[in-house]
Amino acid sequence: MKEQVISADGALTISLSETLSFEDHERFRDILDSIKSTQLNKCIFDLNRLESIDSAGLGMLMIAFETAEESNLDFSLYKPQGQVKKLLEISDFSQVMRIVS
Amino acid sequence: MTIYDSSILVVDDSILIRELIGACLVSAGYKDVSYAEDGEKALALIEQKKPDLIILDLEMPVMDGFEVCLRLREDPSSQNIPILIQSGRDTAADITRAFEYGANDMVVKPIKKYEILARTKVHLEKKIFVERLQAFHDRVASELEQARKLQLDICPTAEEISEFEETYELNIGWHYEPSSELGGDIGGILPVSDKQMAFFIADFSGHGVAAALNTFRMQTWLASAQLLYAAPNLLLEELNNFLHANLAAGSYATMMFFYLDLETNELSYATAGCQPPLVHVTGLDTQFSLKSSKGMPLGLRADWKYELKKLPFEHGSKIILYSDALVEVKTETGEFLGEEGLQQEVNEIWNETPTTQALIGQLVNRFHQRLKTDEPDDLTIIYLENRKKQC
Image 1 (cartoon, one colour):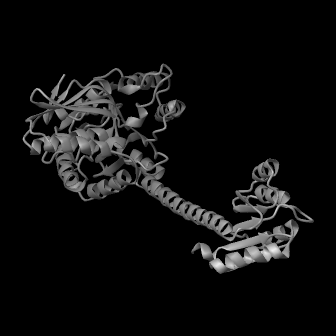
Image 2 (cartoon, chains in turn blue, green):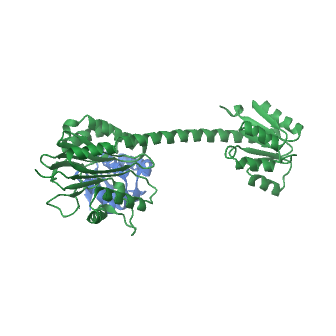
Image 3 (spheres, helix red, strand yellow):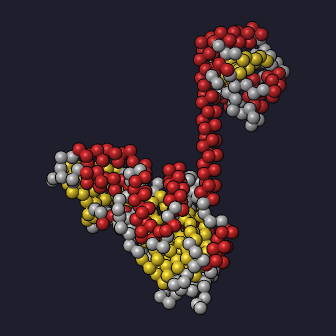
C-alpha cells in the first residue's frame, strides 16, 4: 500500500494505491490516527488507484468508517475500481457508507 | 542450559597447547572440556559423543585438521557442530582451504586467552540460539499440523456424505483442502430431519491461527442454533451479532446458509458476501448461472438485517458453492479466472461429462495447475444435486 494524506478544501483526503492487505495494518493505524485528530469534518478515501484489496483490507475500511463515524465526520469512498469495487459491492458496503463511483 | 554447560573438544598434538586452551576455558567457567591429540582420536571421541564446539589444530600427525573438517561435514550428524580452527598456518591458501572444508572460524597461534574465549562464546551462544529456534519451530510446525487435522475433522467424512446422499436422495460432492498455513474456510451439512437439511459455506477474514480458531467458534455456535436452521436470514442475523460481539474489530466472516426442504423441494437461503453460488434450477435454467451472494459480512455491523431468498430445487437441480481461492487464480491468458470464468468452465465441464466426480476433479486439477501464487489459501468446493424423483 502507498498512501497520501492531504488536508485541503475542507476535507481529509486519504489516497491509497497498489494493494491494501493484512501487511498494511500497522501503517493503517497512522491513517486512523489522522482521522481521529483531524479538525475537518469530511473524510474521503480516494480508492481510484487502489488495485486490489484482501479481506483484512476490507475490514480496515470498515474500521476507518467507524472511526470517522465516532468523530461525526462525513465519510465517503471515492471511485473504487475493479476487484476493489466488486468486493465492496458484494459486501454491501454502500448500505453503510457513501461510495462515489 | 547455559553456554558453560556446553561440551568442548580441544584437538591439538601439542600437550602444551591443549593444556593452555583447556586452562583458559576452565578458568572462564566451562565445565565439560575434553581433549584429543590427533584427528583420528578426535573423530573417535566425536563418534561417541557430539561436542557443542570443536577447537581444532590444522597440523597434526595421523590425521590433520583439514581431513577432520571434511569428515565431520560429510556426516549429517556432525555437519552442524561449530569448528574453531587454531593454527600457526595463516597463509591465505590455508585459511581459504580450512573454510572450504567446513571450518566456521579461525584464530592464529600464539593463543591469546581473550580472543579464544570471545570466539568460543560467540559460537556456543549461536548454537544454543539456533537450537532453541529450531525446537520452537518444530513445536509450532507440529501444533499447526495437528490444527490442520482438526480442521479436516470438522468437514463431513466420506461415510457421512454417503449417508446424507442416501437419506436425502442427493448427489453430494465435497472437496476441502486447507492451505499450507491454517485458513479460515469452513463448510458443513447439518441434518434437521429425514426431509430437511441445512448446509453452509463460510470464510473468515485473514489467514492463520486466528482465522482457523474462528472456524471452530462458528461450528460450536451453529451446533447450538438448530432452531434457526429453517430461517437462514434469522440465523445470519443472530450469528452476525454473536461475531460482532466476539471478533476483533475489522474481522469478519463471509457466509451463505441454505435450508433445503425436500418435501416442498424448496431451497431457502441467506447470503453475507460469499462467492456467488452457481445454480442450475430444473425448469428455469439451461445451464449453471451465478446467483447474487451480496450481503454485509458477518461481524462487521451489529443488528444487520439479511434477506431471505428462495429457489425451487426440484429433481435435477444443482448448486455449487466454492471459496474465493478457486476464482483467484490466473488463467493461461494471465487474467484472473473470476466468477464468470468459473461459470463458463463449469458449464463446459458439465456439458462434456455431467458427473459430480468429473466436475470436482476437473475444477481441482485446473486450480492446482494454475496455482503459482505465494499466498496460500484454503480451497472448498461443495456440490449438491437433488436426485429425488417426483412422486
